[in-house]
Image (tube, rainbow, N blue to C red; front, side):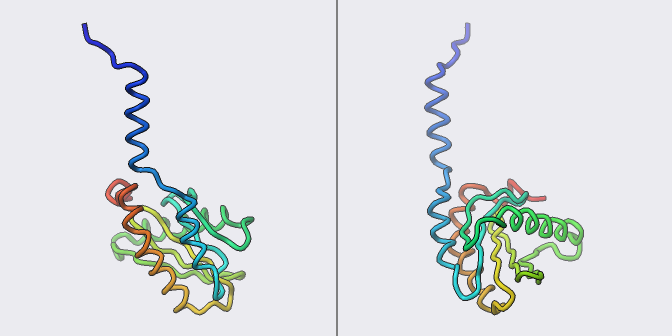
Length: 149
């Protein structure tokens, strides 16, 4: 007769396993908050599907809209142009209310939203600095290979 491990064993095992790969959204939010100046209104880290991991913004009301639309545009472009551009690095989208900069961080997406007068160089430099700072921790939690389209 095979012995079935106790519920306590499973509880301890899953608790240990998940704690090793746990992100702290509050810490990521503090890092993202540092980018909110010089015309940047919001900074978001999300999954490829648009689910928010963490964000910092001057106004929270549009955050879910930013994440959903950014992920949709990123994925649509990547799928449609997969043969032409197999290494999409970033997108800059000019909208009525501002400029959106989207780039990949491992399996996640980073989105910076600036006002209409933000300097594109500042937007790109901040995104690259955030990407460099967050890429290693995010790669440990969600390896890129697990989420390729």
